Image 1: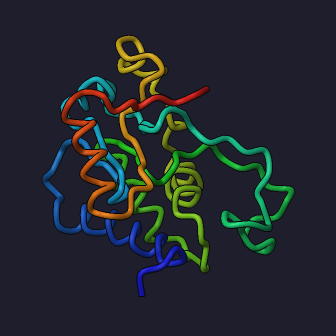
Image 2: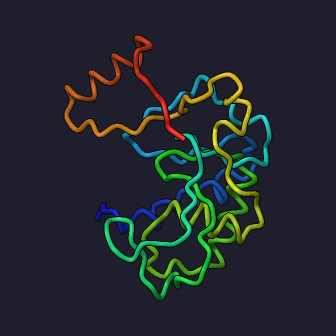
Length: 183
């Protein structure tokens, strides 16, 4: 069944596929939602440093505490309130080089998902830290920000119907799709 609770498993399978089936690949790896528009034509401006994990929506998420209620909750036994929340990227749009993705998979292969619901927090936060990778960067911290300050590299859309999606695509093709983020 395709639902929100299955996102961690689906994300893990993406990392696993890269690690096991694309072992010779040395390049950029993106984890994006299917309802997200990405500036693929400008990726080189985000990944000038192969060690960077880049939050392509704009900036890393840094919460001082987790939520135990609402859509983005975690169970108290999974993340006690005394634990510090690591910086992580919004799961709709995160990019890195293949070596970093493989290291995250290696950490995932040794870690029980334990029904953890928040794939972005888990993979680009907890497992990234376990893999001893640097904190994720916002767009203004990489070469992208020098050229496109305030502009996101991806846009998550809530368009649900064919006509709504067609309008977004037309605006994108005509260069009129604002892909901004606020700091």
